[in-house]
Image 1 (cartoon, each protein chain N blue to C red):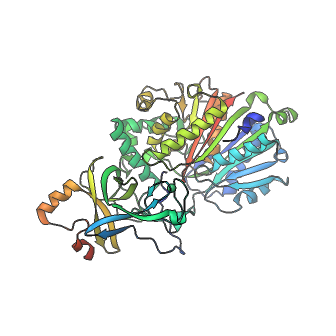
Image 2: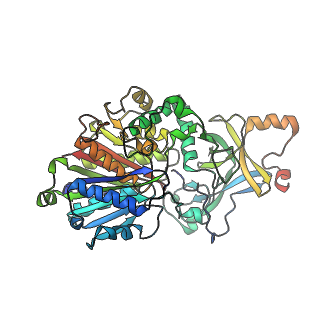
Image 3: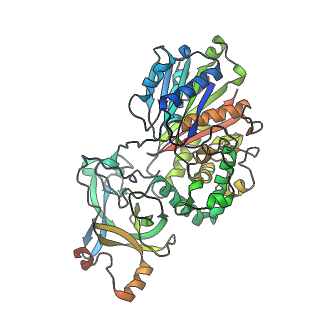
Length: 382
Length: 156
Ligand SMILES: [Zn+2]
């Protein structure tokens, strides 16, 4: 592993913007993307002409979607690339923008995520000669339903306890004006039909909608030179990105999050116990329980007890998915990883009105995507 | 997701798919790929390269593994616009290593129970599904149905 270039030169989040996550709508991706970018520019107090490179994360809207959209912000000749990394597309855009600044290639860069509800086209062996005995029968929700069954059997937990994740995240989402689902839900409501797969009900699963998110990153020099507000800047301490390893006999989803998070935490010299906020890839309720244990913020087999104790609530030991997570804020794919950094920045600034986790200083942004890939960032208040 | 073989997207230029099982002396065997360099056994079979060490070409050989094992996990799928629901899928831990994702047909699925494969002949050809050994024995006693890998099941 190479050195942490984010330790060589400080990279700061200076502006955040979102278009709310919504169900399929008549709005174009251009309208949503520009809304998020303009909100981020206003938040930073920055002109578009100062942004030197842009990475646009999406997975469903096709070639050159990013570059054509950015023309409507005025001519500036910036460097543009579209980033596709399945559900981690937005997180990967953040990583590339941060690396541009860290390397000194740019002073100010932007990561954007934007997507519409549209059928993505997948590549890889699934399209060629590798078939399985269950071709087309195991969608992601069934993969995680199987992990849920296994977790219940291994730990003796009940589905009511697992569904507690969704109750918490719906409660958080109800306080987030950008969330696709903004309704408090009781345990009974979460467990009510429709049943999707096995013990998974609709409200334990993420709604895949559409929307946009933008994060502007800048060097500390640029903050001073451009007169940006240093007190609202949030540092990106490290970034880790990994493809899963072939490790038969262990839960590969858990192993991937474990190794990626450990790499990011070590690079940032942050202990799991120091983390105040986690924005977690909770596309399905079971994932939060598996991943908080894999991240080391909670001992193995302890997640259910800690959840029931309120330790993962806003105001608890570590607020997990204060935005509502993928379950309530939603999962428009391209924007999701960028939106996590927006939420974390808002929390670390102390500006998350109505859902502020007190004293938040250090945070983990965690996404997983088909492949499987995992991308983790560690952020900290300056 | 641990496995990328779970999407239904088919390429119009897809090559003829590899067979996934065969019948040897009346019993079903899964066709897998064994790596001569590191010993990894992978299912489904493929020639692209060893997922563990990357070896390719002659280092990859076809290997037959028992179409039986224990139930690692399972689910009953209720939402699927392309298939009749509900149906069961799961992962079977085979003695030869790989976790095999497959269709199941089990009355009372229980993690850890012994399973074996059975060939089902339907309108769209043969499919392989895993059934519980204990339930199969009960059924066998009742009315002698098609059992995994018997000659009748294959010819049928
Ligand atoms: Zn090998």
